[in-house]
Length: 545
Image 1: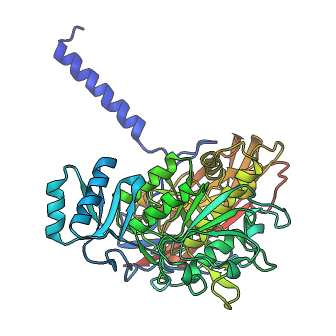
Image 2: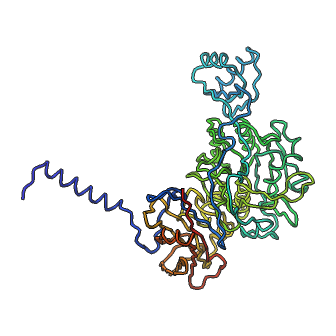
């Protein structure tokens, strides 16, 4: 049969449409050794049925913890910097010097300058700012914004925070406290409140770079001390992850834990100039800053690794500078490796790390303090990167060591990268033993409620397992028990690091009838030689709205 050209075109378009539908249609059938749901969806959204909100609590018992909507997100729009405090960014060295000269002629003294980024921080009235913009072509001007310590926003939450780490941090991460010279040869800059050597570790190699006259607050302001202690403390109850590093304390926040984007940018440049390999930033802001991003990019171009806190408001938004591409954004987990209720989420999250109830130093005479928050998770990541850098003895650049640490995390939540755990949970053992042959290890990974695909009758639960060893596993069996009823799934030829998963339709009627549904998974493989990570238990419940 002959067809006209227009008929041929219609037939071709129809074939393409059918093929597109076939390719894009969601496939929930079991496929061995293939992970699905790589991108996380919110775990608490309304289903397509009646107004419901699903909750999943990862626990070792049946205790539940319900998320409440935060009644207030502090600092989202607030600022305590001076009215008119502005950062001027010149297009080149010549314009930078010309602006400084013009300010001197006007009798205006800059609050601060940052020559490397052609930037001047100054308090200006609107008329003077308009005059400068008129006199200098292409000058950029932006109001400076506040940067602050993420607060522990526990009040908007109820129920179970999760088990803390206490003094078990090193053991949990797989770091041998008896190993000497951990982190030797690595320079870490802590940009925070001031650090007191007498509080953290009198014998540690700590140097102060005081750009803003904040060092006098070191003994009264505990946050910087807590961060530094997780890195370099050396005490029976408080052992740092990398006590042999050279630590540069660059206070960029005052005694109230507040500073500005300009101050933080200046601290980043100072850290780079002082030879830092890694920069620790347990601070942030919800306001973007072109200058701060420029400082981050400057450091990254110099080969320096930057690590930042995601935030503690329990919202789907990551603080700056952690949200920038060149910063490792860190969320927090409890001692069961499950996300802390306060930890912010978002696509920028790189990984999650210990951040609940960690023993730390605080202020003079305060003794051991319990430190929680993504602020605590940041030095955990920094310390592991420092250890890997030191372990490899110069064979890795700081950026390569950081990438190695992120790549060798342990999966949780949705399979592979998600908005809560990023690539996974920090694991020094996996990173350190990545090139050690003969490790056979199958681990239970995430339980993830795919609420975006809930129906009137069921909500999909994605259960996962991971090959956390260094050898391909010929078979790996994942057994899921839902309210006493077992189901088993076997995967073949699972490669090192690979995440596999299965989908269980959980009956909404069953959850409503019993108030909750308990799910337990166990993973097994022949000759597993690193045990203790084979099980995971969760509880699913519903709240009506």
